[in-house]
Structure formats: structure tokens, C-alpha cells
Image (cartoon, rainbow, N blue to C red):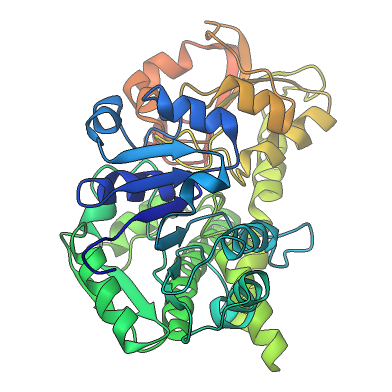
Length: 423
């Protein structure tokens, strides 16, 4: 197999597609996704996630796409990159992982290797996924097939920290597969490969990476609440503290997306299952989960002090995606703000040049604005720091307000003296 690798990437989202394009420069690569619309899009050399370009897809001559499981049955290395969200109770939602494992188990052959890149709790790959593969295939792990784990580190919308420039953590169920995967990933990762001591260590490391960020942001969010009571601008404090070499300049804000707002729950779940209730991680999650309501409360108070009645107030939300310069709407917390303001009978317009209008309607029932109305709004909430909004600047944004309109800047896009309130 070392000489005749044929790779199948299962799941062609933000993680899977860049991986498929990269591997296709070295090996025949098959991209598989159950979403036929996504397959048709990619066959037309278009990527709605904007993680790859039309030119990159056109140049990927060894890459093909299919939604038919039979088309990938000839592969000998399967890399699974499906999402791993949480359910309404913030418990791990493993159904995408389960379905992918069942599908690959049904076509698994002796000598094949299955690699998981999806974020999971420590132990899930071997204790959960491998059992499904064995059950569906009738094969035995480390006797008939082997297992690998290489946690994704994709940062959606980031064109600097890309797949090739981030060190790749790799682990496997035996030494031979370790060597194979180290060689495989080394072909596409310029930054190099780090071999973890075990699959569980690699799983835990991935969860910890994002949990640490979640906790750091939670600290800044708590500072924001605390300093607001003292009448101190939090961003001015962070800017000043950043003059010390070892200060970490995180900023307060909404925590959404498919990683930072999700991965800590996987760690919490496994820890509780093992008999320990993690207090600091859980508290950080609680703080970050509460921020959208906190923003709404401060916004309503500012409106009241400005003598603007929330009922029928014309409010503009600038930004819907979970982060800047990225079309990803997964787990965006901006929706919670919109819902709260709508429940208060405000007339809320949402404008986001990055968000897909069809997805916004399908996911949240929102009709995005095509254009901006000058001199119209009673209030503007700056929720996502897209480059287009930064380029508008203070003048461009304030031109959208009526004479008594206010600006609440959640992201610190404008100087403190240019806005009425900022987080």
C-alpha cells in the first residue's frame, strides 16, 4: 500500500476539502460527501466555504468528487472529516461520526487504514468509532485494519494559518501505521508533523487547544462586565496591559463557531463520565454562553438612556457569521441577539456581505438586506468585524443613522470616542 496509496476524504467541508486538494497533488484522491448539492458545486470548481479557489480546484487533476459510496470503495486510506457538534443539552452529538463510520465500515477491506480528523473527546476514536468499523466490516482492529487520528486545526477564513502552515498532530493504533501516516502528512504539511504518544493524547490535545481559548475569552468577557460597572473601557485596559511582553491580548466578545464554543463540552462530558466535574472550564462556558444576553441588556439600557423606545426601533445588525471575513454561520451567537431584539418588537435589519442569503433564510429564517439605508436607523450593532465594515469607517457607519441614532460596537472596530457604547 505504501507505493499505491489511494485516499478517500469523507466530508468535504471547511476541513475535508482543503485536505483533499492538498493530497491530490501527490496521490489519487476521492472526495466523498452525502450532500449532492455540495458535490455538484465542487464539480463546477466552486467552493462556497471560500477555503479553496476555483483555480486550485481546476488544478487538482487527481481529485474527483462523488456522493456514491461505491465510488470510494477502491481507496485504501479513508480520512473522515465530518462535523462533531453538540446537541440542545450541550452533549456530544456523534451521529455524523456514527453515520460516516457505518458507511466506511461497510466497504472496509483488509489492510485499509481509517483516519479520523473530527474533534472528539479522549477515547472516542478507539472506544466508539473503531467498534462501529469492526461491527460493520467484520474485521478486527490492528489485525485486519488500522486506525489513525489527526485532529484538524483549520481556522476558517484565515489565509495565513492554513493547512500547510500549521504543525500536524498525528497518532495511530500501531507503529507501522504511525510511520505510514507521518510520511503521508509530511507530503502536504510544510510546518511538519508531530507524532503524539497515543490517539487519546492527540484527542485530548485538540480539545484542550480550543478550551484554553474559550477560557481566555471568558476571562476577558468577565472583565468587560466588571469594568463596565466601574465605568472603565475594557479595550483600553487590554491595550495598556498588552505593553507587557507576556500578556495575552484576547478580547471580549461572542464565542460561536464549530470549535471554541463546542470542544469544551466534549472535554467536560468525558471528564464527568470519568468521575470529575471540571469547575473552571464549566464556569468559562457559562460566562461565554451568557454574553449575547449581556450585550442585549446593555444595548437596551443604552437605548433607554438615549430616549429611544425599543418597540418599532429601527435596528441594524452589521454581521451575522460567527467570525470575521468568513461565510461560516455555524453556531453564530449573533442570532441570539437578533431573536431577543425581535422579541422586544424592534424592527431588525441584518446585513452581512459574507453570509449566504439562502443559508441565512434556511438556518435562521432571516432575510438579509441587499443594501444599506442612509440616515435611517435608530441604532447600529457592530457584531462582526468584516473588512468591509472596517473600510466603511466611522463616517460610513454613522451615515446610516438618523439624527438621534446610536452605535454599539461589540468588536472594538471603532475608537471609543466614535461610538456610544462598546463591549
